[in-house]
Image (cartoon, rainbow, N blue to C red):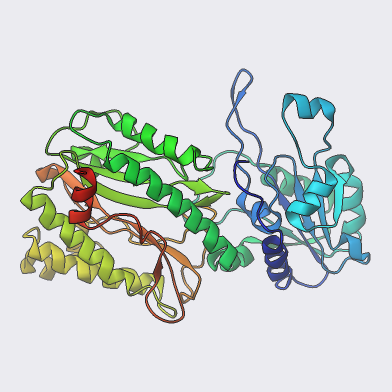
Length: 430
């Protein structure tokens, strides 16, 4: 890992919150991710399963966390299993967690080698009545690969058919949606690294550069600031490419007079940032580009004020639609007849702004968080309105990451990243 060691008290606090919602005589199990193969002896770079990281800080493969608050023996109320390390592994793969290092990372005092899992787990299951399985129930999930978590659930149900089953996810959706201050600080660090990358790019872009060259400038700045890299697949979309919402080829040359939509964020310590900016290749917006740009910025600024405790995600998006509709009429893209005759299930503004405006953000770019409960303080949301006009050859999206607060407006974690059109132009023409 490139990041500084996180204070283990964060993970101690997260575990206390989780176990406080568990049923009596229940046990919860969380597995690390696999290392996924590509072919031959090649593998994907390892990324930890977010839930075990959230609860333990352990950031390596072949690890298992067991929480059993009603265990007879106090030492078994939270247990960590990690892969046994040795000199050979240290030479070929690098340092792995020792038992002492596992405690320093997680705050969990009872640490066993993974080879002892079956024996210890059987002993604990003789005391437990209910098992919490950790399934992925994010509203955007689309998983076709069997995970270690999936394999564990199959094995556990076969081995212990008399137990009852519960879901960890409903607890985690609520808990992970509201951040501790330490988590907000880590997201801020990711946003600050993104800021450095963007400012570098503002002074790099000119007519004739290639989208992949811009991507390379970002990754250079991210890694040199102790990020693993991109928090998600980066979008560098010049010209009409910006009207493809998930354009990721990044293989076209940037032409004079065009705009470039940059949807890019750094990760830090597994926490994400999520930024979108739209900049002019030539360093100056045209009159029409500036009109649309300012309209998108006004929408972003106005709807950010709606991210307050007590508001609902669905109602918030309905209000965003009204603000966007007004701006589209002002730009001449819609008229009142379009609005009067619109399909309620697909409002007129959706022709030019077809995606959502905000999502939870944290350990995942599209993070866990309840969408049907009221918003509350310390939730972190993106704000990302856009206007896409294929017939005019450009699309504009602007996005910041903000923290909901009890008093006052949301706190913008990207407050230092240039966003005003004049500021963008000034940076590009220094």
